[in-house]
Image (tube, rainbow over the protein chains, first blue to last red):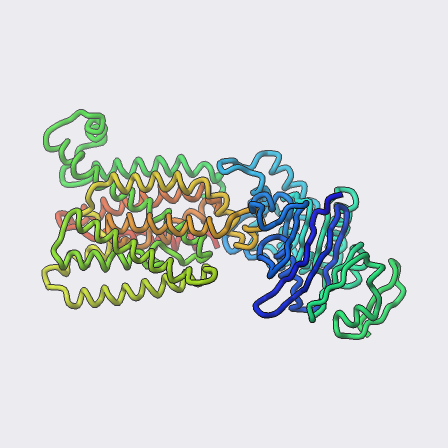
Amino acid sequence: MIPLLKTIHLQVAIGPRMLCRDLGFEVLPGQCWGVLGRNGVGKSCLLHTLAGLSSPASGSVLLAGEPVSTLPRKQIAQRVGVLFQQQSDSFPATVMQSALTGRHPYLGRWQWESEEDIELVHEKLALLGLESMVEREVTTLSGGERQRLAIATLLVQQPELLLMDEPTNHLDINYQIRVLDLLSGMCAHGGAAVVMVLHEVNLAIRYCDHLLLLFPDGEALHGRRERILDAEILARLYGHPMVALDGPHGPIYIPG
Amino acid sequence: MFRRLPSLAWLPLLALFSVVTVGIALNSGTIQVGWFGVGEILLGGGGGIERQLVMELRLPRALSAFATGGLLALSGALLQVLLRNPLADPYVLGVSGGAAVAALLAMMAGVGGWWFTASAFGGAMVAIALVFGLAHGRGSWSDTRLLLVGVVVASGCGALLSFLLAIAPEQDLRGMLFWLMGDLSHAGRALPALLVLAGGMVLVAPLARSLNVMARGELQAAALGVEVSRLRLAIYLSASLFTATAVTLAGSIGFVGLVVPHLLRLLMGNDQRLLLPAAVMLGGGLLVLADTLARTVIAPQQLPVGVLTALLGVPVFLYLLQRHR
């Protein structure tokens, strides 16, 4: 199987600071990856690099075997979708109009969105509980509703690889679980793959089969969740002692 | 009430509006020709002084006004999205400042006709190159940096203008002030501006959906497949060219470029594919109306049309803003 995403000797830097050195990992269809690390360790920056939105200090990122740096943006957008940490709509638009931008990579220069596109938007909005807000102005939505709209837009884009920066941001517990269930369902049955930054360790453990841990010194650990995770690693990752308790879905980690 | 109209329905309404305004312009003045008379003359009939008046004076001026208004509104709409700033207008990046400095210098040097037009346009081009060069610098150009450089160059031009006005000979002052306020009475041939407007619209229309995406943020747009830096460059250069053409034709007519796009956003939403052509028609039509008033209200005296656009537009805009609260 060709990996949807593969990095080779990837080095990501901000100015003089090296965020990760010699990172090489593969994301196969069906996998769900969690990216964990402290604030400012470079999680978002890495995600942007994987999406080809910023270029690495060295090394390369391959999307289905092709270097992301040589692909036209439109082709990248048909394969990879990105959920950003913040939404920044500054002009009036309705929920429908905003979600329809997810079809942009598939439309020709003079082409308008079709009935099927609109149907698709309705379907994805309903998945995120936004079906009653189709004609609302985006600027009147609450933070959590905006986040759900951004996720719905990402689903409208129908990428095979979803790079998500804190998808549970602003969401209440009900929607945190709903969104993560939805994503893991897409991985398990839809052949998609997800790489998401999470701050909630226990959600990451529950939903991600693979983890990528970024340490402040530029070191990175990655692999199957059960192989790399324990209280000691987490304590080193966050710089705070962690304790494992027994929970309904396996161990639960809480700050010690 | 207005909002209930589907956005698409506004386009034919606005097209009708622009045709009617041009009709009004052809029909207004000391000699009334009547609607049938205007129709007859446009179709090649009629004769004598009336035909001459309509075809040689009123029609070119109305078309100049339409082209100017359309260009300004289009440029304003583009710059507001490009700079992600609702306060942006066609003049915010210093294009009109550059044109004005060159135009005033040309007036003081006593050149007229083609040379005057060329120097105003040249001044605008120098300002565009200057702002673009400085904003680009090394490294990337953010919209904030572009806006800052533009505002600073514009205020530099403002200072130069004050200086020129201070040292200008008395008899030139009135002409200079009229030009600065925006005035169509010396507008030359409308055809070049109309061509720029039509060509520009054809060029910009296929970018409109990308602009919709760009209104959601640049990173977001890039992630949705927009080549952001290329789009930004295309929008910056075309908006600047539109402004330069308008300013060269009629001086710095204020208000149209700032308010027409906002007015339309209130009425029909922010889909650029509809907003851009709508802006051309509303901006053009409004300026034709304003210019007709400018030459008839206190005839035979003429008012600078820029004063009228603001006097008419401010109350209309404030009213709409209140209603949509």
